[in-house]
Length: 309
Image 1 (cartoon, one colour):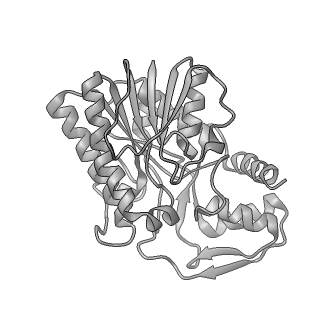
Image 2 (cartoon, helix red, strand yellow):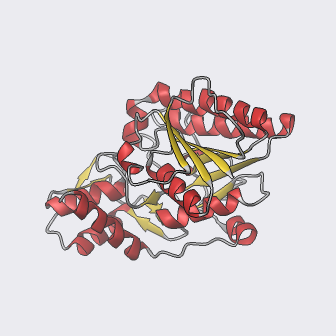
Image 3 (tube, helix red, strand yellow):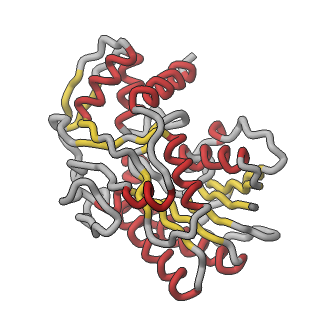
């Protein structure tokens, strides 16, 4: 396939580019680099790979055929989307519209990288695909939550009205190599603090939960969805739920750090629970998590150690 990956220089997008190339596909990576980084794709030397610096909220022109468009462009960490609220809304709305229009023109299949954030601060646990969520549209996190919810609505409209072959993946908390140290998410923040012996900053009392999926498992699930004929949203994530406090303690243990845990005020609208129901992914994609949390954290810690050398 000839595949366009928007946001391809980001954390998940760059790993997806790697996987597609390993599978023998031709990849066009498009990114405006406001949160992505050339460092994430600098290792790629394949002649089957092209990079274009472009904001997908603007008109997109790609020559020749396209078989698939994977729309991963968006600020994704709380620090980034709170710093770039309008850009986040634009790439979710205008960027999705532009890429869907291109898919329609090229008769390409299309996958939207949605998020567990569409469930907001959920009132059910685990979260299944039929749950409509609990989102504050005007809260500070609403810029990301509602951008993804609008994007999903746009994708389904193009599927129903124009017959575009679409997929929607709802990605739950994913971690691994190429995460940014300063993106505000728990895993890179805790690892960075632990390696430097700094206090580990836990928001609230740390009882809020997350379910963490290692990057190789996430992109394998995404690829299986690409190769399927499933048009409805699919959750991809780990079923193993851990509190933020337990995560901090585990990272301290794995890094053999002397860091102490300190508690900061809980951010507005911070979800209290986050765990996917992946029944559909198991049944329809034959996908499930393979990498344990401890093994994934060890590999991520090693990568951060090498990064600091």
